Every structure is written in C-alpha cells, then in structure tokens.
Length: 365
Image (cartoon, rainbow, N blue to C red):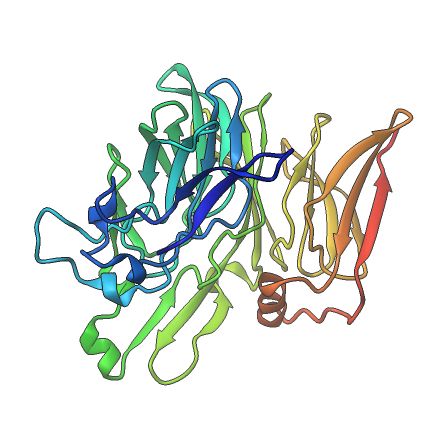
C-alpha cells in the first residue's frame, strides 16, 4: 500500500498525523493507479527531510516513483481513471499541524524510467513575470528544475539544463512532459534484440542526492551535475560513460540565475560531485568531488580560489560554523554510497581503502 509521512509529538512520541504518499482507493488521487487494489500500489518513499514554511505553516515533501512499473505501463479501460500514480514524483504541500494535503503538483506522471523527483524542495522568493512570488523549486534526475507557487501549487516554469534526451517537450503552461519515443523500448523491443544507444542521463541521473545551494541575495542557484549517458540493450549490461563532447569530464557545476532562468556559468571537472554544495555570505562556493578534491569557487565567476585533495571522496554535506569570531568549514570523507562507488568506476578514479575522516578548515580572517 505504499509509504507515508509521519508527524510525531516530540515530548510523548505519539503519532500526530500520517499522510500516505500512495493515494488510497476511494480517496482523492485514488483513481490514478490503473484501478489496482491497494496491496499492489507500491513506492512513494520519501528519502530526505521536508522543507517547512512557518508563514504558510506548510511542509513540502517529494515522494519517489513507484517500484512496480509494469502494472502501470498500460492505462485502464475505464476512461474516468488513469495510471498517473499519485502522489509519486510529486511535490506535496501538507498542513504542518494536521497533515492535510493542501496542494500537490506531479512532475512526472506514470514514471517508467525511475526519474526520481525526490530531492530537496527549496522555498524562495523570486520575480516571476515581474512580480515577486514565494515559490518552491525542485529538480529531478533529468536536471529539469521546476517552480510552483508555495501557497497554491500553481505551476510557474521549468528550466531544462540540457543534460537529458528523454523528455522531448515540456508544456509551458502546465509542465506536462512528452517523452522521446526512443527513450522507451516497446514490448516488441524487449522481447527481441534491441539497442538504444546514448540515453542521457544514466540511471543515477544528471543530479541525485547532492543538493544544490541558493543565494537569496543574488538569486543564484548552484547545481551539482553528473554528465553521464548509457547504452541500453538486450545483449549486455548497460555501460555508463560521459557524453562524447565532454572530453571525459563527468562533473559539472552550473550557476543559474532564477530571476531570468539563465545559466550564468558552467564549470567542468573530471569527477562529479560527491557532496552537496555549500555557499557563504562572503561569496564562496564549496564543492567536493568523487576524485577527492575539495574546492572553494568564486560564486560570481566559478573561478577556483582554493583547493585541497583529501584522503577520500567527500561523502557528507559540508557545514560552516563560527567559534570565537573565526569561521570554519567541516566535511566528512569515506568511500561512500552507491553514487560515489559507481562514478569512481566509470571515471577511472581509484579511491584508497580508508576509514571515515572529519576534515575542518579555517577561513581567512
């Protein structure tokens, strides 16, 4: 019957409310599951903490796709029902006190390709058509970022960072996506020999758990990206590789101005990021890659201002803090999770078999 979001009283530990991320039969959204019984509706897991807006008293989450795609591949005979599979691959806004669903927006309907709109939801104030709006911004594995009105869920815009060839078209009014026919093998393809070369990105996505960071003063969003593709076929296991135009540089940082939705600068590097970005008020952008480099970039230009090669891949969210007037940056390293391990193999990066290490650096006075 799918997964859920749970609110617990901090003092007593008692459950306050529960929101099911897979819509139940007979409830709103329940007719979007191909008429499946509840025990055949799966997925909707929530990977990371939600985002809270104290002014609206709303919490925002991003349920992941379903786990069983075949039962949703073809639509139902009943025209009053569909196979969109709510609330997977959606942004859901819940009343923080009651768990009531205030609004939802589904970024990818009936996801057969594991595109995972499950990452951070950032609450921002940016101009939209010349008017300042409070919005929720998020992006999925395809490095398509979208904005919704934080109070109503109204779709506002999409930014495709040109890292994918799966979505052929995005409706500018609704955000509905039309997939490229070449990205989805037909049943005849699956039952015979077929080859789909150059599907971008690969299964881990152009972006994953490595969170982006936002500077409200400049309205700039800094996004870590992996530039990888794969060949899908029936003869052998798929192979991950960089786009042929990248000169074997898997890692990208893109700086995007959300006021005009333009990419201001792009920086390439051999290894993709293994950790989230971290920005400072003084204009620094800290990044950490699979090939063990920890760097400070200039937010305005992307220029490398400082770098240090660590003992292993970064495998945590960097933090910054202050003690006695001195600012520090801390980050942990280790061989890490599935993203780090698969990317080191693809990029030919050999990580040493070390244990976990906590690194702390002092910023200049």
